[in-house]
Image (tube, rainbow, N blue to C red; front, side, top):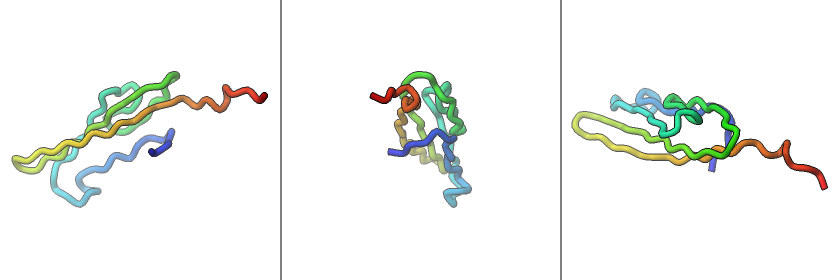
Length: 79
């Protein structure tokens, strides 16, 4: 698992060294936008990012699941 509060760097076709078309789609753009920008939610959220790679008549997709959890460290009380 990757833990980050930073925006995601989603690879493009050029960065992958291919001429194929690469697009990213989020099913919850209020948390992770299609360009990888993260908006910090106040409560736990699940987001699926799907990469679609197309070249000629061939299209492949791969989905990645992300779970956003707000930082709870500040809410913990020392006992």
